[in-house]
Amino acid sequence: MITIKNTHELELMRRACKITAAARALAGEMVRPGVSTKAIDRAVHDYIVSQGAKPSFLHYHGYPASACISVNDTVIHGIPGGYLLKEGDIVSVDVGALYQGFHGDCAATFACGAISTEARKLIDVTKQSFFEGIRFAVKGNRVQDISHAIQTYVESNGFSVVRSFVGHGVGRQLHEEPEVPNFGHPGRGPRLLSGMTIAVEPMVNAGTYEVRVLKDGWTTVTADGKLSAHYENTVLITDGEPEILTVTEGL
Ligand code: MF3
Ligand code: CO
Image 1 (spheres, helix red, strand yellow):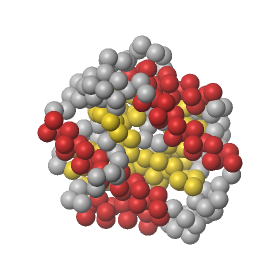
Image 2: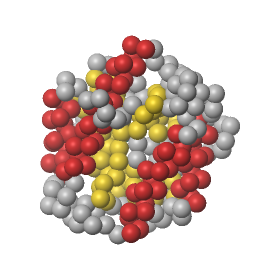
Image 3: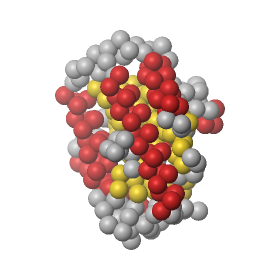
């Protein structure tokens, strides 16, 4: 079932999403050589808790941390630990916060110091593909109108979109219907309605779109060892332009 949020529910979603976006920003500011991924996770955890919220990912299907921190060829679900970031790494940070019954979900890839031209392009194309996609996040359109726009933009820049993980509805549950793939065909998928909240999250690989999951059951890496980037916001479908909820303005 695709849930439509009422005005009151959207107010709570906005607050959850602002906390989530601030946690992402905080994590991004910590990305520099010598910092451990677990230090970033700790800061994300403590910030979310300080806001009266709960980290959405902690213990979700047994996930052991508050943030997913995915470095270089790790696509998503990197488990924070003792790894020390080094100059040239690209670092995807994905966070979620549950506030008064509603989840926010967002991610971004950050540069650790100076990075290669190719890595910079990958980060920029991934972020821009989100904005290309949400141009179609308009009521009356279909979910795959968004998907197709993301795929087209990414592939026209010589990169590939991950197939085996997708965006999703978000609200009282971290993952709700509908699925929001980053590939697809215009005019297909569920119709977008005002009051739907969806996490649009392109995962973009420099090489093949194929990924594999490591033995820990979480860490998802590119099959060819090339770089991957991620960008995600929680987005509200309105009667007009889409509203990005995971923003830090107004905090
Ligand atoms: N943003 C990711 C998602 O939408 C985060 C889930 S990670 C998990 O699926 F650890 F919570 F599983
Ligand atoms: Co998500």
